[in-house]
Image 1 (cartoon, rainbow, N blue to C red):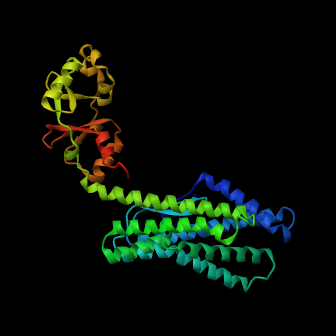
Image 2: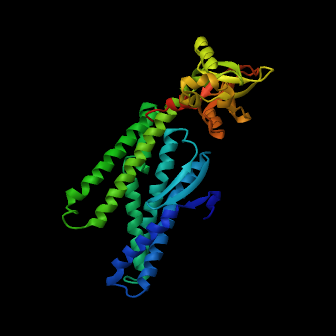
Image 3: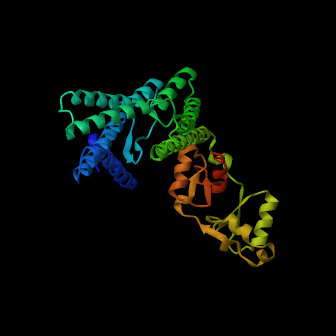
Length: 358
């Protein structure tokens, strides 16, 4: 939608749906003071200004992050707020704290500015109504985001504190994420404690449930992302490689499997007349072939041709290995030494197993 400070801003298509709902709800609230179509115009103006405030909130995160040399991919506005997609974590706990605190600080500053304007604008007018509602909204957004639990800004500030104390960012993320889950459960209890359900305030209760679900899901994503990063250093192509044997394409599948079992290999590589690897036999296809049919099927018929993207250096590890696999999705990859010699075969299912339970 725009590029303030060179940062692309995107709006989720669902935003327009929720914005329409907000306009109708707010217009109904204004029915006692405004009449006709003007109340919908005022409601629409409030919703637009509210999300501009959210954009300013996210821009503050992004600008501070870029000041520390962190790349910002984009800002995304969605129905319940916005997110600044920063490609790298801050280098220190202090920078993490400052990047996180920038958003709530600016929201509270906008709330304070709104309070000042309410003293200048004539009371009871449409501009006064808009300014007052924006003041309240920004103060609520600022205070709510300071709650100490991920995915809120206060959760990232808590993470920075735990990171500073323990020196372990992963532990800090898990602690802040569980704090976020506790807050989410607390929000679910709130309607019962305040009597909102018995009072029939179902709309407010529904919003509380939606926000609690958003916090729970966001905290869960933070936990999974942390576990993912913790497993990256152990992700090495050499350790995951399967021993492979070379066979000609015309060899019966039964004989190819027998030779692999005899060599204790778990992969079959098809070679040409010059012993050059040209294809990898698909493990799933072999398993799906009944043993009684294997003597009559050539191994090459169950193989995928080795394209350039399916040949990976055996020394790949961590994120570089995942990026290489994502660029060329397949079930098996040929791993080669720097000299070009075949080291083995990497099966995608073995790679997936490393992240089981994440």
